[in-house]
Amino acid sequence: MSPTGTVRELIAAPHPDVAPLPPAAHPAPDVRVLRGVPYGEVEGSRPLELDLWLPAAENGPAPLVLFVHGGAWRRGRRDDMGLRTRQWAPGPLQRIAAAGFAVACADYRLSGEARFPAPLDDLRTALRWLALRAAELGVDTSRTVLWGESAGGHLASLLALDPAVPAAGAVIWYAPSDLTVPRGPFDPHSATTPEALLLGAAPASVPERARAASPVAQAHRDAPPFLLVHGEQDTMVPAAHSEALAARLRDVGARVELRTVPGADHGWYGASDAVVEEVFVSSLRFARGLVT
Picture (cartoon, rainbow, N blue to C red):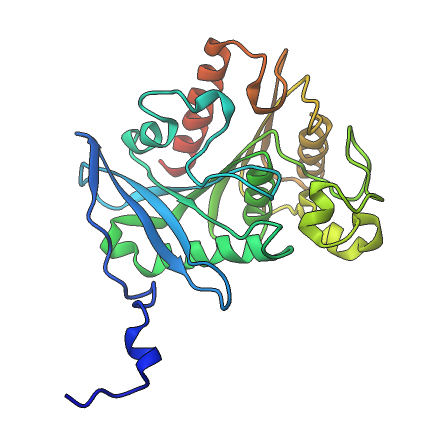
């Protein structure tokens, strides 16, 4: 045997673009899931992975939901849709897949690992990987809905507003939209807020970077349709964030629906089970309407 290349090259794991997919689990007859699928490599960083929930029925390529988790850009799990859905059985991602979507929930680098725009770059890499292997996965990435909660909703908003991303629309739950002005507990002059840790400095000291990270500043008339849902009593990310983004999208002529939820704090804390269920069902209905 006379191998070509160095030993380092030979022992390296296959690149995600060509690596075999893991075997699928079948948590329910109508859904299969592939967990821990590598989608990208970043020099000096951990592998980037995603879970992929797929409808079991083969009715042609499935539309895609890219779900982006929250956690103040500092923490979080890729399969966590927030406080009030953690005990659901079946869980929310399984329910979206059972409705006919492929659902990719992707890791991204957190603010302790890399500063903005690193997490956004990672999610773009995930979309590139999904498009590259779409035929193998049975996914139609031309019908992609971006769905995120909290910090993940912020990143999903920025992705949806990127003209280079072929998004059919966005479902955004209680997300920051403006990193340049004070709202609620956020002070743009502080270097210790989650926003500052994301940017690598107090937002007021890096105004161009803060503006680039603010969905309100990226809105344009060709943006895909947005659904913004926010608790009226949100003490962490005031509902004014979603109200400001909705107003800006309307100003530029884009389609947007804004819903505020009475009595709900961040993560739907304080809302009844029935209200949380209805928010989820109506969000899923909005997503389905974008791709059918």
